[in-house]
Amino acid sequence: MVEQSRVSVPLPQGSCDMRLGQGALDRLGADLHVVVGRPRACGLAFEQGEEPELVERCRRLLTDAGFLVSPMPFEASSLRRLDAASRAFATLAAEGLTGDDALVAVGGRDLLSLASFVAGAWCSGMVLAFVATTQEACVVSPMSPRPLDVGDLRSCVAVAGFPRVLVADPDAISASEGVPGARAAMLQTAVADSDAALDVLSAHLDQLAAGEWDAVCEQLGDTARRRGRIASSTSVAIRQSLEYGLTFARGLSRLLGPDADAARVLAEGMRFEGRLAVAVEGTAPDFAFAQDEMLDALGLAPVPASLDPDELLEACKGEAFCRSNRFLPALPLAVGRVRRTTVPDELLSEHLDAWCAAHARLDASTPNQPRRKEEPCHWTRS
Image 1 (cartoon, rainbow, N blue to C red):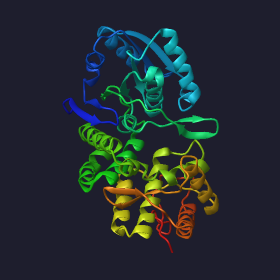
Image 2: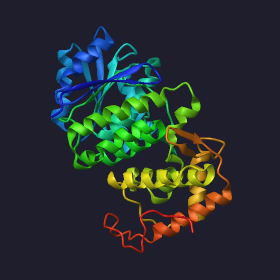
Image 3: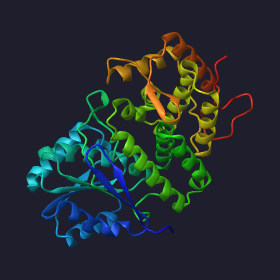
Image 4: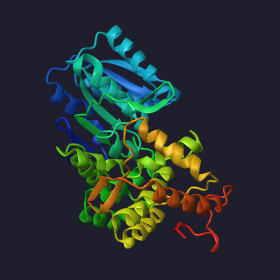
């Protein structure tokens, strides 16, 4: 087992002290004490159904550090909705917590994203700490918390609070939950960052696939640092590079429904937008093929789907226009240079026709089985 490591992750507001490795959780109370200065009270947010032993261990560590802990359980079904934040505010008010106190969140991406919203909005901001229980939460939640849903609008309401402490301890992190999402984010971040980032990820592919914690730990730290640097850039264009794959993924997700595999849908977004970049901006075709190979190596297989191209186009544009007045997918003009780009409607429709035709041939009943030779894994335009 790798020794405990410490990574400073740059964030739009300050930085996050990320501790990885066996025993990292033991420092939760001490690290939060340093940040707060004079401990008084803190909320302990967790998902109902979270391991009681983990929640109790966190409570004791915080109590030993001098905090008066107020448990804040949340139902899993409500984590993505603004209503859950309203209930959290009511709990914070009832417990008398202020902007001088802290909020500690123990959970996966959805719980940590909700805690980010709550901590950022309450009393103009309170100190926030994360105990991640999935790999995805480690590399996405600190700098890219998922916005909340309100009414029929998905992921549109965001007030970001950024953690000062993040714990990634193998005793707390699930061995399977959130792994595909973390791998998709690793590749998305590497493409947005640099060739060097892709080289680091490539060197870890086999170990990541085997679940070796040493490699996982190193890659989590590398991805979090690079993703934080992109998210905290003073350039809007660079910050928007983390939207790579999301335009197509959001539209596809709208049609597939809430049960769709979010990690594989994001992988489809990167496949599709990578090919668009080849057609629109002259990105080297080798990039798209290399990305395909890495996604396959990471276990992110294509999504079987029988969809109408016109409906998919309408869904992609509908999701985009919920967030912006312009339809500008983030395309990889080169590795390390992902930019929002205008795509002609005719070319977009042509690629959507090709994607739908190829993916309709995949056997939806056995999406994880090897594909027949006449059913290509990677669609191409005819």
